[in-house]
Amino acid sequence: MKYATKELLLALYAVAFSVFVAIAFAPKNNYFFPNFAWTWLPQLGIFGLLIVFKFRPAILAGSAIVLALHLLFFGTWVFSKDLDSLIWLGYLFSLPGAVIGSIIAGLYSKRNTKQRFGIVVGFSIIITGAFLLINQFIVCTMVMHCCL
Image 1 (cartoon, one colour):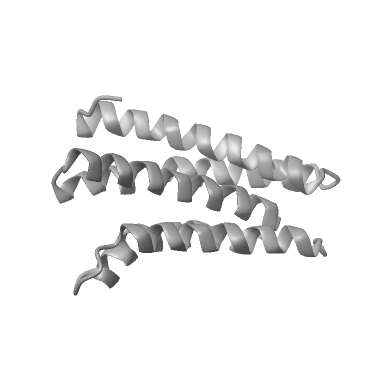
Image 2: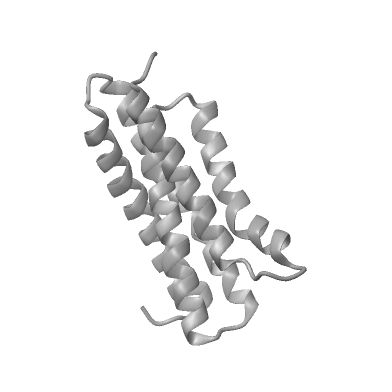
């Protein structure tokens, strides 16, 4: 199916935003690339999964926005408390919720192909964000023992 150029551009800008957030949190030293890869390659895996399932670019855009904001807030929280590096496992372990939410949003968009792309992006943001937050809450209460 052909999609509007603005839908593809929004997906591209959202993925670029997630890359820029990952670059911003990677230390600018010899460990830049491993730290960048640690934070962004799991997101790339989610994006690849959405592409393999042939979901709309609007689903990719919504998921990329949620993942970029999650990395932004999680990284800000980690650096504001000066926590040890193992806390980043909490970021990684919360991503299955984003996968589940993105797939649910993508399956919904495949059933409702006549939806405008803004509605699909908003739905993707809400569903992906909700499942990500649920998973983050579970990880935070069971594994990380952090305060919300």
